[in-house]
Each structure stands twice: as structure tokens, then as C-alpha cells.
Image (cartoon, rainbow, N blue to C red; front, side, top):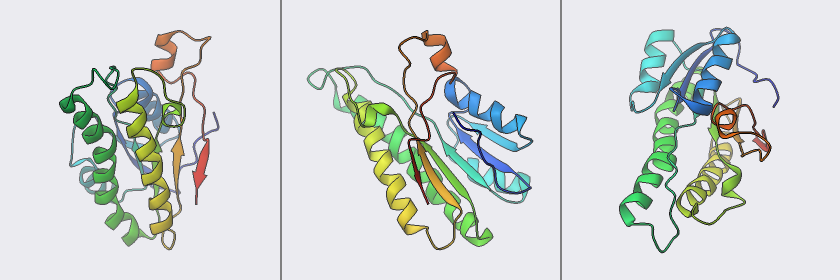
Length: 183
């Protein structure tokens, strides 16, 4: 994994899903680089909070996700919709709230955490794979729409490393990224 490049000072970030797993690893990494971070799990006002607390908003990392396990035949609509609400609509809303601040600043970075499941699905992971594929397309559209004022947006695709144990994977010890970078 390459070292994250943060914008010039003041470095202020919002990381969704920042209380555990890969998100907690991202928060710790940004803090180690000297950044100021608002780590949230279920807070729709995170972007506004960061801008108020730090005076600006340099980076949003959309990491929050849920992962229902069921075949398409077994998946109920409520679980399917909840996966899209958290994994896609949550990222969309964070981006939507961050854009006016970043546009006013003339710069900003959006990092969306996708998954290799979005391009390489597996049995029982249909909802998760579909949401991560949707997040990849959202990132591409964002890159096209924000090209005039923005530093960059990226999509990282973490994946399970078969030689690792689950605990290492949950804390972000193994990632494959950036697989795609959109400027």
C-alpha cells in the first residue's frame, strides 16, 4: 500500500466507519501523519462538524459499509436496501455535503473505499458486490463532475488476502490499492 498523500496544512479529514476495522486503520494513519480527523460511524453531520472544528475540510474518506451474507434467492429486500443505504447512499450524502465546502476552498480530496468484490463477486455476496460496483461508478462520475475545482478523488479496492487471518484483514493489514485513481 502506498503512503497516503494529504493536502497542505491544515489537514482535516472525515473518515466514515472510523471506529473499527479498516476505517480505524485509516484514522490512525492520518493521525500519524499529523492530520486532524473526525472519525464517525453513523453521523450524518460529520462533514459540517469537521469544517466547524478545523475551519476547512480537506479530505473525506467514505469507508463505512455493511456486508450482508446471503444468496440472491435468500436475500430479503430489507437487507438489500440497507446495504445500498449504508454503502452507496451514505457515501453519496457525505460527498454531497462536502462538495460545497471543497468547491469554496478550491480543493479537496474524496477517497471512496470500494472492494475487489465489486469486480470479482462471490456466492453469498451479491448485495455487497453490487454496492461496491455502484460506489466505483459514483467515484467515476464524481471525477468527471468535479474536475474543474478539485485535487482528486480515488477509489481503493481492499481485498481479502488468502494467507492472512481474518483479524489482520479486519484491521487493514492487507489491502490492494490504489487500483484506480481518478483525477
